[in-house]
Length: 162
Image (cartoon, rainbow, N blue to C red; front, side, top):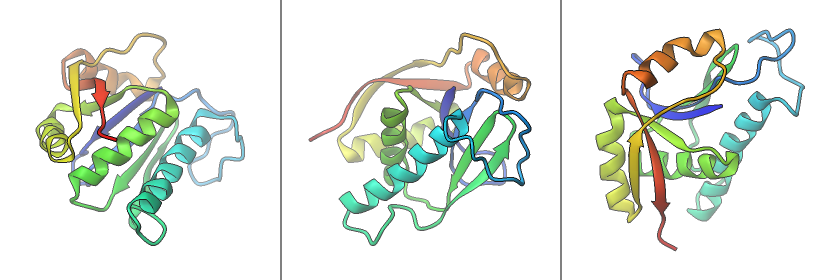
């Protein structure tokens, strides 16, 4: 699974889990009842991080009241933040990364905004060009090409203040 924060053309900043293990009989218009699938695990981590962060911040129930699963493709799930708050998006994405035990990669087009948000939050990290090893689902081939061309950075050695 490849976890990324990026801004697709015509959309807001989004968090993606890509190269998911394919599900039998996947249909984007049907609910997924395979609770062990990578899609379900990723979607649950994204929803739970939104709720837990909202509680920590003293908000009603969620950090993002407007966050939608806009990208539901074979081998991909992605949630669009309907927000301009890069600090909050970065905090959320880091919580998802921690919950999934996956590194967070950031698309080059928004990396500068993530760095500014991290500085404002007191978060520090190092980063390297992203790499992805392993088998690649057909849906992931274009993203893999972007990874190989240096369009993604993976955050590492993340230090979050207490």
